[in-house]
Image (cartoon, rainbow, N blue to C red):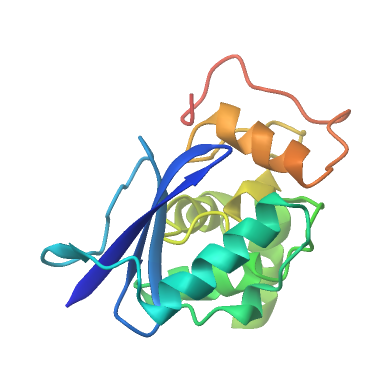
Length: 179
């Protein structure tokens, strides 16, 4: 059984999902891959303890308090490779960005390989089922392009600005898959 609650944020409505003990999803309204990996119906239960904790976490985040990702029990559903990428996303510090290429290099090193595809890593980043909390918005192209956010570039920019990221070297692409 999966439960849900809606949270109204500065980037729009967010839908959270839980198995009753862990956060299993957080999607922005209109997000690509919305409700991916959720089997069956979601039952609205905003009063669950896990949702109270998630609401506090999100309140803190949007108040600029930099809550720790580890403060919430997370259980994103996906294959081993995707889960490994999502774990790496959790290591990106608040207010900082990394590139898809850098993530691919780290993934290769952890897997004991000489190299790994930035596109494959980017695909895993794009399918992150717990947006904002698992900070996929902190990943940019190697040239500073803000491409690749399933929630949309306007929301990615707003989240990065919210965190105080220096946006001088970052830009919105004229065309790309996230537009």
